[in-house]
Length: 219
Image 1: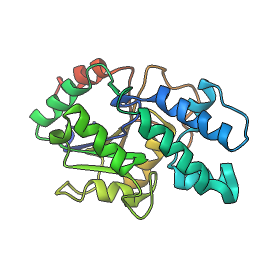
Image 2: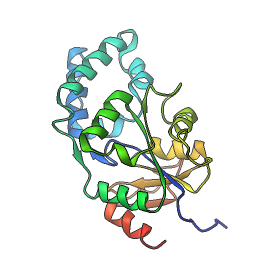
Image 3: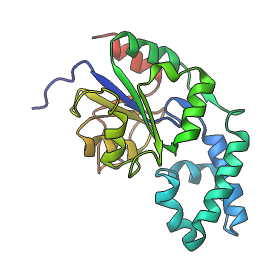
């Protein structure tokens, strides 16, 4: 029998489309890259279902020996527009304030390149909430690798255990949580479908941040 889920000592967040809305920018940048590399463009639905890992982990399969050229196109396109289109998910900052008030260690584990991640956090004025903003390329290996989680907890975080909650919107976040021995939490509007997360099922599911905050208020 599973032990009751207790109060979190730390919360590790995914970034894109968990705390900030960025699918539009990612989709635009991805299609500009595909066009430049002579490949078929993706629908928005394809982008949302296929973009998971970091570019250094996924672009070699997509673009072969030309993946570094594709990476440059993507990041040049992304850098030009990402701050203008950056919007927090509704209630995200209130959630961070709640968790900070509970004394939780807060960090981010994102497959967005580290400098972009930290620039976005600074742009939103959120840098003070997080002890560590760990982006793609900051650790030896990117999410879902354990290295990425250990880096996120390296600024005085607790040991990896189920009281460390890992919150994200995608399967890669749940897999990363399982590898790290953290509590996997799914945060997205669409409820999980039967068999969708066979590799790593969420222990908690929240349809939005308001539901997450209501759960925290019970502690």
